[in-house]
Length: 96
Image (cartoon, rainbow, N blue to C red):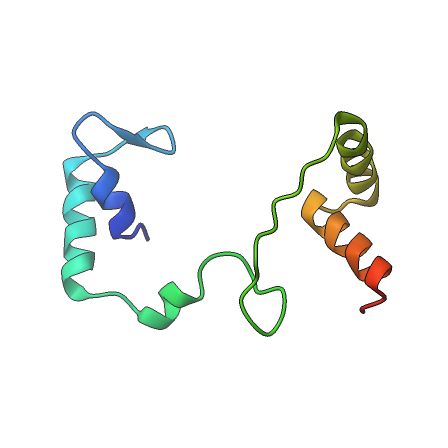
């Protein structure tokens, strides 16, 4: 099901995910919006929680060599760059 944010961006001749938006689809979205949405379902969307509370984004600058090494190690280990950074910080601070 597409939600109202998708509907708000849909205009005549525009596409979503490369597919044209039809008048029928817009009517369906409008009907769904008028019926209301399950708040709990909407709350459950997005990235999974990393812990008990909200997460904080920490921007970090790296030179090309360090960033390249990070990307290679993360790819080799089959994890994301963010997870590799979190693992390194946990190890350095000795927090499980």
